[in-house]
Amino acid sequence: MKTQETITKSLMEKLWEGYCQRVTYAKQYADMVFTEGGNVVNDHCAFRTFNTHTGGQPAGIRAIEEVLESLGYEKIAPYSFPSKHLNSFHYQHPTNINFPKFFVTQLEVHELSGEAQQLINEAVKDAPDVLAGEPRQLLATLKQNKELISAEADRLVEALVKFFARPWQPAKRSTILALNKESQFAAWTLLHGNSVNHFTAYINYQKVAAWGDIEQTMEVLKQAGIPIKPEIEGLKGSKLRQSSTQAIDEDCPVVEDDGSTGTLRWSYAYYELAERGYLETDGQKVWFDGFLGEQATNLFEMTKRGV
Image 1: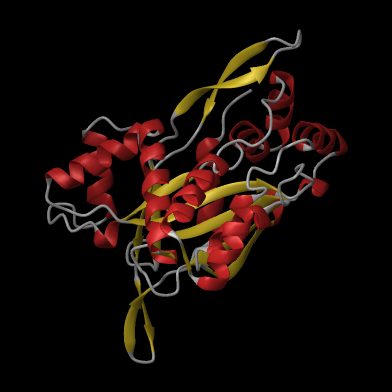
Image 2: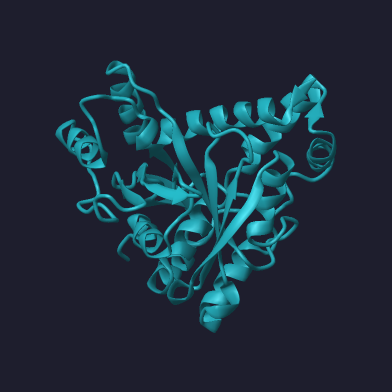
């Protein structure tokens, strides 16, 4: 038998491995930390969704939530970004601090212009339910029993790795470019779907003596030639400080006006870094484990691309 925690660990390893293959800056960071004898611990992982009819897949956050709750994660707190038409939830494992938190966001498609709504809905309306059949049954069993037979667990992890990708067919190039004018979040999500949006290094667990804080870490990455975000979000000594590398660009499949298949060079993901400060609770100091809306808004923009 394999427990929820064993299955979660296996899934996280596979998602991290796939992410590092695509986001070479994350792999470089990990290699540099290991060379210094330090630890690579991810604070959180993020996903983006559309809150609209997405074919057979549940709409918005619910699609990701179904998986996280079956793995034993708990829904912690909501966050709202009205100017960007976004709502998010933070999920956390109740006992294992080595498992990353999750920050899952949905675009409120109905709040966009009529043209943008039409473009998104047309592009995603026929998405298949990648978890239909056995995978969804296994998720339900795992949620209830907290464990699965080993062979079933392996099949579920394999299905989940396929789920965390783009479920719908490639969109039209013209659709991506038009949407990007109104919502870069929409353009990105249409291109990448359920793919990991980013992982985040947990600086507090890094354990590299020469890199004592996020400033020193970002400077080391910069000196190594990794392009980084110029600013650090959050003041020194505050409860959450964040920065990131720049986002990696990829050639994404799109449909051209004549119906042929082409590619569009677009952002995929960045690697975030987070340093958490202390809060005093009942006379004890504990690290702040939530998120700050304004800082998250600024990090959303790291995948923005010009038209």
